[in-house]
Image 1 (cartoon, one colour):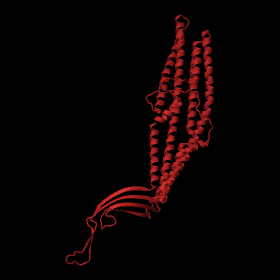
Image 2 (cartoon, helix red, strand yellow; image 1 turned 45 degrees about the vertical axis):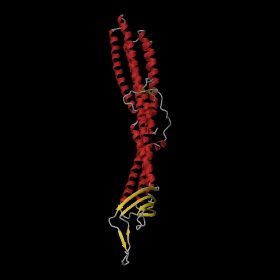
Image 3 (cartoon, one colour; image 1 turned 90 degrees about the horizontal axis):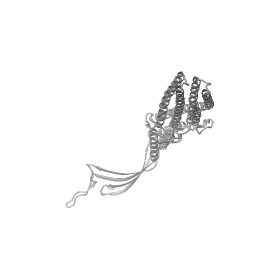
Image 4 (cartoon, helix red, strand yellow; image 1 turned 180 degrees about the vertical axis):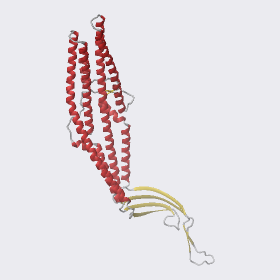
Length: 434
């Protein structure tokens, strides 16, 4: 009767797949949160995104007026002199006019603004903003990869823990039966052959338990690494038999919304903007400047004193020939945009195939799990019946041991089917960008 109670408790435990409790026991949501926070790769991507945003702000500043304070000093060894043409006379010396003393000082405040650049500055600014946008989508894509890895590692660890629990329960059943049989052997009721058969099965169960413990420990360490705790064993807290939340059917629009696709859209548009900026390099550049000077000498070289004055001006530059440099840069950006378009098409096909495959795998795994759960219940009842008939002397030890082996196989196959179902659900969530 005790064996029957153990079998019933084991079946219930496997249905719920209760995890360990302790300071390192985490739910799936907590593992996902910690993984996103602890990822150094995502942190690096976020810094790259911030850098791209500052680049965009820098390009935006090129379209606006700028103000600069400048100062200069120059010395000229020769200066211009002007001597009066009046003839000298007694008591009269013709005046000599000197233009400066060779020392030139200039403090100025300069304001400049670009008036026309053919759209080059605007296009470069837009390209920089698209680069920042693409970086954000790239970070989101990497976060989806991490979430997918954590989900898979979580359910693999939960499955490994369930396998360990099943191995513990099998060993306990066989140990209890071996102890009872040893007592019966002492009083001459059980045979030596039956005792040896149970002992051999017990040793096999102990070996399987050691292997299950190692596999579970490795799975927990792998989960810990993904959430930033490589030295800790993380015990899954959620029940293995609970499906992941998203259960809607396939929608092609979900693939269009994947961050990889949106990132490529931003990169394609970025290349188009850079192509426009290259073409704009063939157009004239016009700028204006207003400068306030405080200089010595100023505009009055004769006085050679400090004075203030201002200047206003407009400048233009136009590259007439550059050996096709600008056109080549524009063509290069056009080719890169075409390459990215081809990559986008391939990414769409890849994730569409992954979504349909994982959805089919998920839908096919559900009835398999249901059938194996029913088989586990049947094997549990069969062990219960054989335990009763064995106690009544109507069954052999070999029949009972065969039933125990069949129950163990049913347990492991059911656990494997549940893990496969959870992994298929995780794969589908990743394929649709969840």
